[in-house]
Length: 284
Length: 339
Image (cartoon, rainbow over all chains, first blue to last red):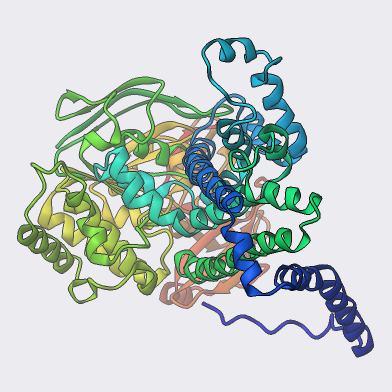
C-alpha cells in the first residue's frame, strides 16, 4: 500500500487567513459548546457536593433515572434488531418499494419529535383511534411507560439502520456467498460472517441510538403526562425542577445527562478510531 | 462427478445473460468457460453453483437433478474472483470454516479437523502461514487460501471464477501450472471462467467459447484453433486477418464471392512483387524482439493486414515500408461473409 501523500501545499492559504479562521472556529466552539457545558456543571454544584448528591438521590430523581434506563434498555435492543434486519433486507435483496422503505426509515429524523409524540396520542390516547378499545381492556399506553417506550423507539428508529446500510453496501455480499457455498446455514452465517464484519459499525450505531434514547425530550414530553416518580424521564425531570425554580437541582440532574453525553462521545471516538484501524486492512 | 446442463436460460431485468445453454462436463474433466466480458460465463458458473437460479432448464449432477437445490446443499467448491476470504479469521480458520459450520453430528473432532486443515494447507503450500490473517498475505497466497477453503468440504465439483484475474502476470503463470498439477492429482471435476485465451488453452482439457449467452463451440485447444466453428471463435482466439474473396480466390480456389478467408498473422505469406502486379504495400515494420510485425495496406481492405514473421526468416527476406508485396497464406479458414 502507498504511504499517504502529504497534503499539497498548492492549496495552502496565507497565514493570516488560516489563523483568522482558526480563531473564529475556536471562539465559536468556546461560546456555544464549552461554555454551556461548563455552566451546567458549575450551576449543578453551586450549592456544594452534598446538595448535588442529594439532588440525584431524591426519590423522584431516582425514579426518573430508573425510567430512563428502562426505556433505553427496551428501545435500544429493539432498534438494534430492527436496524440489522432492515439493513440486511435493503442491502441484500432487490424488491419493489425498496427506495420507499429507505426513505421511511429516515422519517423519524425528518419529523419533529413533538409530532412523533402527537401521533401516538392520536392513536392510543383516550380520544384516539384505539383509545376506546384500550380503555375497555384496561391497557394504558399514553401517560404511561409503554407510551414513553413507543415514542422513544420511534425517534431512535433510524440510527442503527442508517449506520449499517452504507457499511454493508460497501462490503458487498461475496463473503456471505462464500459461506453459503461452504454449507453455512442462516444462523452460522450471521454469527460467523455477518456480525464480525459489521461489528464496530453496529456498536457505533447502538451508541448513538442509546444517547438519543436517553436524551429524548420532545416526543416523550407529549406522551408522558409528567407524573412525578412514574412517567418522568431524566430530561423531563430536569424541566420540572427548573420550572419550579429549583435551579441547582435541575442542573445537577442535567449534569448527569451531560456526563452521559460526554461518555458517549469518548466511546464513539474510540469506536470510530477502531473502525478506521480495521477498515484499511480489510480493504487491502 | 459429471455435470449436465440442459437448455439453461437466465435473464437479468434488462439483458439476457444465458440463452439456452446445453453443456455436458465429464467427471474429472477440467473445463474452461472462455468469452468476452458480458458473455454470460460467470452467470453460468453461478448457475452451476446454485448461487443463481435459471429461468428455464435443468442442472444435473451425475444424473441427479439439482436445479432447485440451493448452494448450501449442492456441495460444490467455489473460488471467487476476489477470493471473498473471511478477513476477521486466520488462514487456518478460513480453511476450517466449511467443517465448523456442519451440523454437530457431521462435524469432525478437534484433532481430526486440525489434521485435515493442516493437510490442505500443505497441499496449497501455506503450512507455515496458518496463523496469519488474509490482509497479511499476497494475492497469490490469498488465492491458494480460497482454494484450500473450497476443497476443505471435499467437493466433487470445483468452480473457479476468473481464478487468476486479480494477479500479476508472473504469479498468474506459476499458479496456473500449479493448479493444473493439482487437478491432475485430485481429479475433481473443475470448471473455471476466464477471458484469457492463453489461460484457457494452457489449463483446460476442453474449452467452451461463449458469446452473448450462447456457447459458440466446445472443443480442445487444437480443434478450436485449427477448426473454429464460427467467425466469432476465430476472432476471439487472437489476431486474425479477414481477406475478402478477390484477395484469396487465387490460392484458396473458393468460388463464392462472399467468402472470407481468416488467416492468422503468422500464416500470412508476403513475397516482394513488381509494383504493377501487386496493389498491396508494406506500411510499417515493427521489431518485437523474437518476431517482426509487418502491417500491409491493401486498397480492398479497410484495416491493415498483419503478418508476424520470426526474426530469422525475416532477415532472409527483408521487407521495407513502401515495398509492394503479393499476399498468400499457409493456412486459412473460410467462412461465408457475415456482413
